[in-house]
Amino acid sequence: MKSYKGYLIDLDGTIYRGKEPIPAAKRFIDKLQEKGIPFLFVTNNSTQTPEKVVQNLSENFDIHVNVDNVYTSGLATADYVADLDEKKRSAYVIGESGLKKALFDKGFTFEEEEPDYTIVGLDYDVTYHKFELATLAIRNGSRFIGTNADTNLPNERGLVPGAGSVISLVECATQQKATYIGKPEPIIMEKALKRIGLSNNEVIMVGDNYMTDILAGIRSNIDTLLVYTGVSTHKLIEQKEIKPTYEIESLDEWKF
Image 1 (cartoon, rainbow, N blue to C red):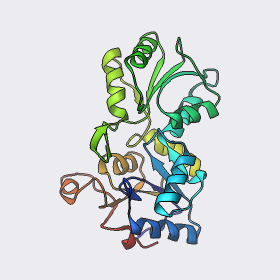
Image 2 (cartoon, one colour):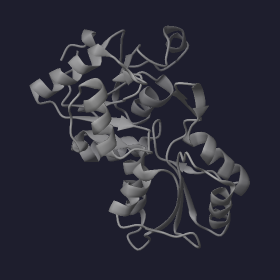
Image 3 (cartoon, one colour):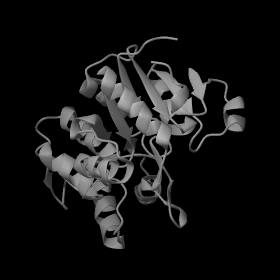
């Protein structure tokens, strides 16, 4: 088994399940910290700031990391658009505080009329008026960016609309496709590698979802570790032509 210099790790379904801890995941992170191996939590959740993610891990799962260990689709989106054109720094945003703060920290101002970019993510208070402004901006030439394509996300009541559902409405209204940033797109992986300071052949992507985590690794030529504690089942993986590099039932099985 290859030895890796760094780990890119999914959160929900891998480190915890909603509000339920996965004990093996805490032991896994503890081992990484003991050995001094760099790791980055790579999450498609754009709604929360890294500070909130760190707080949630600490208070609810007894996993203690710092903000430098967290990379959200909001941060990746801000990094991506900031690198496109240093003169363009205005955006209209449908999204929560995690996305807005990431953009603000990169020097973006928020404009409703003629923004350089229209950036759409999950927004718990989305309205027709917000959709209207986004649609008009994109139709007038604003560049259309989507944080991540997840159509649904689980909460205590079941599967509810995710960012992909919000973005799809704007795609339908504008007849344009968004540039997606989050997993399984290579963009978030490229930015995550830059953040952790390693190359694609030095790290492994760890996750529970073939369609996001594992595909993100495959598309970026990064080795992958699928753990069967979340979304993907053995039956699903059997049907896939390209398999994860490794498959395990529990993170306790992983040998560093």
